[in-house]
Length: 402
Image 1: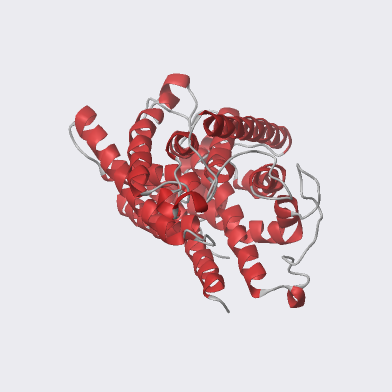
Image 2 (image 1 turned 90 degrees about the vertical axis):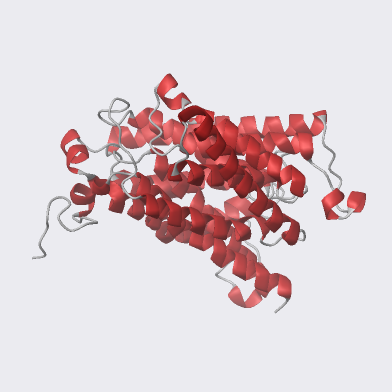
């Protein structure tokens, strides 16, 4: 087994760790009566998406046919039904790509926190994975020729903007939480949030530098962008509110990491800091727009992931450079108007497609099985009403086994 294959396998494990990290990050931010529901929404993605990916999703996202827009049913050496014919690197890449497919719908869970039926979530995730994630992934990464001209190292457009646009659609269809925005619901467990942030940052080194020839530079860029995002958000809090917060610093880290994701192998270290600083400042203000426009994005998926992904995708058009990767021989990519326009077009297409299709999926679910829990369930908490459990002894209704 080559060193490249070993690193892909290690990166796969790192990205896999991001899912429970995201669960803790989100879980700490919701109220105590909904924490298990949030953990379960994320953990469910680890169960259903691999099965969907093995059956159809991988073929749709990475088929080797000559269809420019959808790689449907082009079975090749990646497939688990022919393991004997697959090279070790192919199978490692198959698993690595699977982890990205898992975490993308999990990101959406933060926007629907506190009010979505778990039964609706069980259907939404596999349907969204097939109808939205796989096609968008193919447009940017798969096929004989990419349908969209985006440069995207690890999913700034395919994952973060894609999930963020879907989060916006889901927030609109679900409606506001009862009492929002008048009631203040602070995170119930900030240590969870901090722990989740650390796991996400740790896993992001595999996220951005896995399976890449420029892995060392991507790793450094990931470190610096996250740090710059933390500092930018903290400074903005001190300027506007006079005190830095734990939640703010964690949010800044994630914003910086999201922004550098599309650009990790296209910019140098100094530029990586600009990505983090820019995202920290812009996302700080972006999360405040939800009250102005009236959409209840519970845990700021839109303001951090969608906006942060847009910041990172567009900055490639301004700061892309091959100097950190060996000069002009590294890759033919030049910052400027053409690249910036291509990035803009790609982002716009994904934004519109993801929002529209997600909106339709949500409306269909709402009209059939219902998308939102009733008022009583929302008041009691989703842990007890949806899962018959409580995260903390004495916190809510007790259910005995019979």
